[in-house]
Amino acid sequence: MLGVAAVLVLTAYAATIVTGKFTAVAMDTSTPRTIDTGLTYVRSLTIVVDAKGLPPQVLYTQDQLQADRPGRFLNQTLSKWATGLTINPGGSFTLNHEIFKRPGATYYWEARGN
Image (cartoon, rainbow, N blue to C red):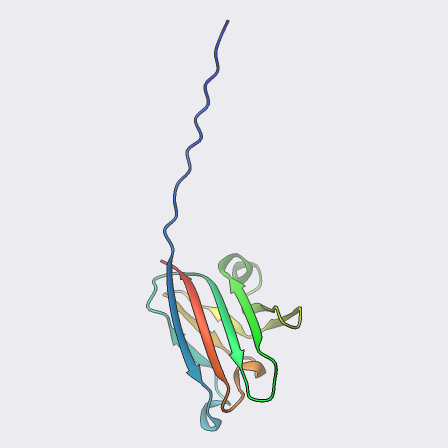
């Protein structure tokens, strides 16, 4: 009788979480904004939008989605897809969508990667 032994090897992926925030001002809302996270590679990105007079919105994207559709993100609050949030090589991301161009709005971001 032969015995079969199987070994499952799982590799642990250590992700670093970095957070930050910025507030949009009227003079810089016409150009895309690039944020450097300090990471080498961003795997996922969540942004919470706090705009006066509007309900908070949660935006999400990740590297696999960006590989298939560059700039694509999900507005989880509205359950809508949009384009204008790009994860760049080297650990930064670029914001180029009307939701990021609201003077006085504060954007709280969380990047996960390494």
